[in-house]
Amino acid sequence: MSVKPSGKRVFSGIQPTGIPHLGNYLGAIQYWVDIQQDNECIYCLVDMHALTVWQEPVSLRKQTLEQTAVLLAAGIDPNKHILFNQSAVSAHARLAWIFNCVARIGWMNRMTQFKDKAGKNREANSVGLYVYPNLMAADILAYRATCVPVGEDQRQHLELTNDIAQKFNHDYKTDFFPVVEGFIPKTSARVMNLRDGSKKMSKSDPSEQGRIELLDEDDAITNKIKRAKSDSEPLPSEQEGLSHRLEALNLVSIYSVLAKQSIEQVLQDFGGKGFSPFKSALSDLLIQKIAPIREETKKMLADKQYLQTILKEGAEKASAIADPIVSEAEYIVGFLK
Image 1 (tube, rainbow, N blue to C red):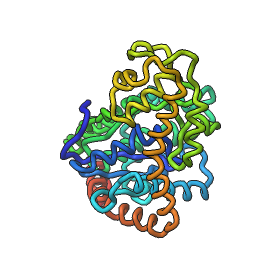
Image 2 (cartoon, one colour; image 1 turned 90 degrees about the vertical axis):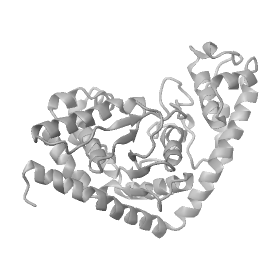
Image 3 (cartoon, one colour; image 1 turned 180 degrees about the vertical axis):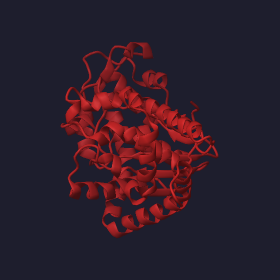
C-alpha cells in the first residue's frame, strides 16, 4: 500500500454519528484535506452505513449536518471536490444489491469487524451490519475509484472490495471494475482512548473523558488531557521506553502528529520530565488545532440551509459520475436499460 496518492480518483466516507473526535481528525479528516491538492476527491457521509445499528432519526439528521460543518471547517473544499450524504445517491444501494449477489457468505463470515461489533449475540444484530462490507465496496466501485485512504482496521474490507470486483469481472467476462489501491496516511495517528490506552478513541464510548471532540471548548480540552491516564514514571528519552506504557505512548503519539515531529524528537524535548509540563504543552497544541475548527463549525451550523445546499449540490455531482457506471453494471448483469 502506497503512502500518498497523486492524480487519482479518491473515495472515502465517514459515519455521521456523534461528534467527530481527535481520532477521526488525525486518522482521516486531516489527510482528506491534505490530498485534495493532487487528486479528484469524493467524500461521503455514510448515513446508510449508520443504520446498521439503531439511530434516532432526528439525531441522525442533526448529526449529518454537524458532520458536514466540521468537514468544511477542517478544510474540505466542496467547490473543487465532492461532499455529499450517501442516501442521496441511489447508485450506492443499487450496486450494493448486485454485490450482495456476487459476494459469498464465506467471505462475510471472515469479516472480523462484524464479529467484533456483533459480540456474542450475533443473531440479534441486523442483516445490514452483516453485509455492510458489500455496501462499502459499492460506495467505492460506483465511482470506479482507484484509491481509498484506509487504516489498518479497514484493510480487510478493501481486500473484499477487490475480491468482489474480480469475481464480478470474472463471472460476466469483463474488466469493468478496476483494482482499488489502499493508501495508509503517513502522517496519521491511531489515537487511543485517553482513559484506556488499549482501546481506540471512539464516539460510542459512554464516557466523554476518553475522547477529545472537535467541538470541545478550550477548558474541556485542558481538563480531559489533565485527567488522561498516565503513570508515575517520567517520560523516557528513547522510544523503546514507551513500549509497555500504552497511555504514555498514546499521548506522545498525539503530540508527535500535531507538532509534526517524530516521537524521538518529542522525547528529546520532554524525556526525563514528568507528565505535568508535557500535558500542558499537549493541551496548548490541541487548542491551537481544534479551536479554529470549532469556531468555524459553529458559524456554519448557524446556516443550516447552506449546509443542505452543499450536500444537495454534492449529491448531484456524485450522481452524475455514479449513475452511468451503475447503470452499465446493471446492464452487464442482465437488467433492461
